[in-house]
Length: 217
Image (cartoon, rainbow, N blue to C red; front, side):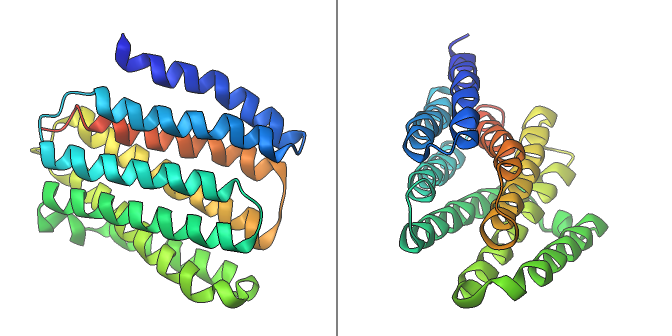
């Protein structure tokens, strides 16, 4: 039961976060967002750790996500850049974890081509509006795409426990989609709908990855 208390508490905070976003109250948004991020870190910490190295990679990645959430909740381009770098580093930790979990075969299957095509399309869609953010956003797209490929490789590996494989794949996909919505909000069309869709996907993805700590083995 203890494992499910953080996501339950987060669901209540998420309602407050979405209301604060709709009401355009940034400091209230931050006051709701940070505790949710702390809770997904705690969720990873209270899971069993059958693979200690995987736990450490995921814990650091989740903590970097917490830092990124704080930065993206602050005003200004500098805070946004720091948040972007923090999330990028977190994705790299997830990539390292998935590389150790998954054999090479899963990285070279047809769904990987779909991920690459979607990411290329996302880049071409965003590129006219990126300006000075062209290089950091391009690097971010590359890293999140590799993260998604790694999650698929884990899922493709039949030796992986199915609950872990599903948690990793669905967590990575929802995180990826939420990142696209953040990019849309920042560079294409700002609006509450981006947060309404993106925030539940993002936090859901992070919680699934946190739960995967106790499911791998």
